[in-house]
Image (cartoon, rainbow, N blue to C red; front, side):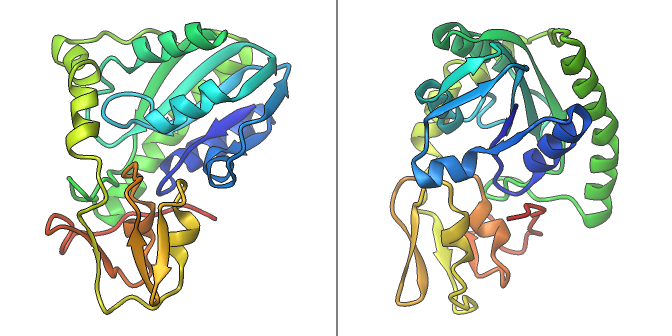
Length: 250
């Protein structure tokens, strides 16, 4: 069973390809979060968790959802993370710890570079660059699916000292001081379509007088800002003039 969390579509693309290669079922974690669903999932096959890297680890909200959800049948757990940057840090060690604490059998973590979407900090590549990156990633996802299908563990990637620092002591500091929604603003270009409300996995956005209002519980998935059809949403001055990247299919 393939479980995926996605803000702008990179992880969705990866999850759908892996599911198609394995002829397996997809579960969209975003929808489970929006509906407050934890519940029980039964699969005799491996469990595959696909998500973007957040602060050099599996996103906190995905970790929390896994902890609060019951998995029956297959216990093998694979993690496929998409990243815009050059390193996954020490994400594998924390995924392994998560498995140990939840009774799953850790089978490895691999990160695959995809187009940058975190425009609260970086710029998205050009359309041509995005297409090239996705084309390079597809055979990697296919190979990962074959490894999962054969029951092989993913190879362990070497971890640098800086990688241990980023995933370790720096991770909680990053969440504490940077992952906030106070920087989001909306301009008069807003057409009150409500797309940002529908796409927010944490139900953190509501419309007030036709304009989005953020309520303080944000994970910086960029679903609202990158998915806005009129580019009415900005994050401080950082996102101004930057190309949005969004391939998420609702």
